[in-house]
Amino acid sequence: MKVRLGCLPLLFAVGCAVDPLEQSFGPDGRTIRQAIEAFPPEQKEAFGIFQRRCSTCHSLNEAFAAHVPPGSWAMVVRKMSRKSGAGIPREDVEPIAEFLEFFHDQRRR
Image 1 (cartoon, rainbow, N blue to C red):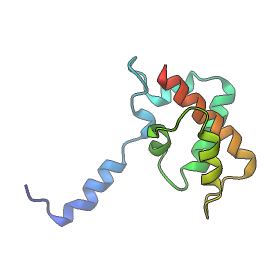
Image 2 (tube, helix red, strand yellow):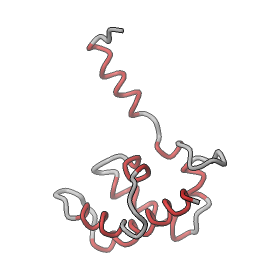
Image 3 (spheres, rainbow, N blue to C red):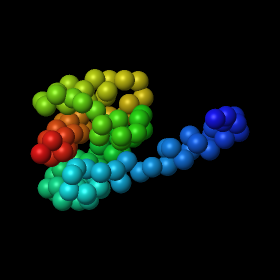
Image 4 (tube, rainbow, N blue to C red):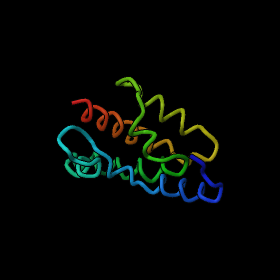
């Protein structure tokens, strides 16, 4: 099958248009968005910080799909916050890491 070069930007754009929050969260059929809506208020607030800060450098998919051992998110987020242009202030590192620990713990269940 040949792909014309003129189609590549369209294919790329279509592939990027998928909202990561509409992906499946688990076997019960809920989306990530629906699962987060059921999280405790402090986790929903931390999700907002995560979404605002982390999406400046990469898609949310990267964090949602990452295989980070339990208890290691604080180290990962601290490392990311030190990268040039990251824009993650020190006070946001802990809530972001706690959200990601909570998210992945809920997903494992």
